[in-house]
Structure formats: C-alpha cells, structure tokens
Image (cartoon, rainbow, N blue to C red):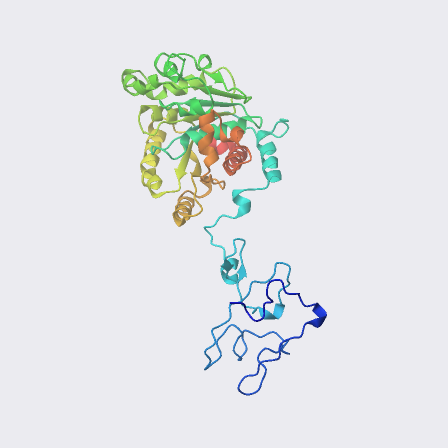
Amino acid sequence: MVHRDVPAVGAARPSPESYIPPPPIADDAGRPVNAPSDRTAPVQRNSGAPSRFETPVGGNVPPAVPQQPHPGAVADSESVAADTPAPAAGGVAVDPAAAAYVSRETPTREEDDPPLAMEAMRAVQILNPSGEVTMPRPDRTRVMCVANQKGGVGKTTTTVNLAVALALHGNRVLVVDLDPQGNASTGLNVPHHTGVPDVYDCLINSVPLEEVAQEVEGIPNLWCVPATIDLAGAEIELVSVVARESRLARAIDAYPGHFDYVFIDCPPSLGLLTVNALVAAQEVLIPIQCEYYALEGLNQLINNINLVRQHLNPKLEVSTILLTMYDRRTRLADAVEQDVRNHFGDKVLQAVIPRNVRVSEAPSYGQSVMTYDPGSRGATSYFEAAQEIAERGVKEPVSRNA
C-alpha cells in the first residue's frame, strides 16, 4: 500500500516552486486546527492558565512530552520559576537552603586538602632547612616524663614528634625509650634488636648513659637511648636492687653532655619503670585521648604522681596536658576537651592533635610525621605543641625547677 502523500517510485519529484500546501482542516466550529499559532509569549508555570504540559480540563488529549532543548539553544529566563532548585555537578537538583547549610561535623576542603603552596610553606617552616629559625631554649635541662597508664593514647607518638620538632629548631634533645616494646626507637629509626646496648644496661648493670645513646640519623641535635626486649624483665630484676626507684635519675644526672630537653617515653603501666621515670623527671606530660576511657584512669595516675612527689621527688609536677586523637566530627571529643580544660586549666596546651593518617603511617617508614609529611595537619599540630612547650619553659623557668 502506497501512502497518498508519497510519490511512487520512479515518479518525477516536484520542484519547490510547485509545492502547494494542503488546505487547512477545520474542526466542528469551523476553526482551523493545523494553522500556525499566533501565540508567541511563553506560558508562565505559576499562572492560573493550564500549562502546555497539562491536560486541559474536560479534555481527553494526553499531555505532550516536553522536548529536550538543543545544546546550543538559550533557555528563556521567564520559562523557569525562581524557586526551581539549581542542578548540582552530577545533574541532581540541590535545594538552595540545603546547599547554604554546612554541618559543623563536615570538614571543609581547605582543612582536609590545603593548597600545595600552603603545604610547602608549612613544610619549610617545620623542617627549617636553613637552621635560622630556633625555638626558645630553656635555662636548664627540662626532663619531661610522658606518662599515662592507658595504652594507645599517643605517648610514643607525642614523644617522638615533639623531640624531632624541638631538635629541628636548635634544641639539644635526648629521648629515653623506657617501653619494652621499643616503639620510640622504631619511630626514630634507631636499632633496638637483641644485643644492642640499651636502657636495660643502664638500669641493671649501671652502664653510663653516653655509651648507650645513639645519634638519630638525619636529625641534628637529637639522641636516643633505645629499648630492647630485655627491658621486659627489668620490672622483676629491679625489685632486689638498691635504690631501685632512682636508677634512671642517677644515669641522667651523670651524663657529661648538656641537653635542653630529655623526654622519657613510659610504658602503659604504673610499675617500677614508670616510677623510675617519675623520679628522674621534673615535669610530667600527660597525653589524653579525647574519649571517655582516657579520662577514667586519669585520677589514678594523678594519685601516683602525688605519692612520688611526697616521698621520692618533691620537684615533680604535672606541667603539660596534650589532647590527642581529636575527632572534630564527634561531640564526645568536644565534651572531653571541655572537661579537661575546666579541670586542669592553663596546663592544657592550646594545640590539639587531630586524627591524621599521616601520623600513623610515619612509623612504618622509620620516621616521625615531621619528616614524613611536614605539610600535613598532624605535623603542623605537633609543631605548634612543641613551640608552645618551648615558650612556656622560658616564661616559667623558676616555678618549674624550684
């Protein structure tokens, strides 16, 4: 069957001039239905008249399917209502009110991924390659014991990164690894396998500390006294030793060189090793994880520090509280921070260490986060904490060493 409007095959095609449009078709009222419309104004979606995409009242004509605009066409500004949500990057409509609201738990782009220029500036400030920028040096050696009987609060990480930050800025620093796990030795890339002279020889065999201390490779002005697995038996062997609580203090006092800072990394316990560190130290630095369990055992640690002050070391004092593993997405971290600041006051550093994956990755490369990724938020936070500790030591030298 051949349509009447289609010419047969082989027939001559009519020329454009000879084309005659078909006559208009009229409806029952006599109005042409295929004539071109003289309506040029766009239809307002919010007007009272039915839309061109709606079925007329009482009619049986299905709504027309809206055609997709041509890519090059320009949309009519009046054809879109003002309250229409704007499409997002993925093509999904976004409510302007929802787009304007940003949750306090949502990190901003600048905090999570700072520009490369900002990271470079932080890296240069932290690494201090020229050596011109220095942190204040104390008048006498500050022996700081990093203690907390709860494990996993960041004692070793705090010890390593504060020591590196201070050493990179002109301070002579000694790290004493008093934890049998030897994590501080690992973080500083110091050999601590079986057979290496370590702090155990100083405590049990009275070996001088200078024969055990090792220079940290790549970090000037930084030394480390490593700890091996032999230290695990020191708790039992020290029981029968004379003046067992002050063995470490005597070894540090007999060191011929001068240090600005001596950091003692304690094990997660309140045994004889921690007591030795408390007797040898003048100040106690307590890292507190921003969780409830970290607060639960803090009262017991404070009681032990008071006992050591009364009977063994009257100069001992809790001088610094550092909040670690701060997760800004949780309200619990804010609540713990407020409780600690209300209880300890000015002893809490303004610098807070956030949760940062770079801090956890650095020990696997035998580095601190200060050298592994100096532009990260973790390195910046530890640098600010070290600077604050150095400035406090200069402002209050008499009260802490009286």
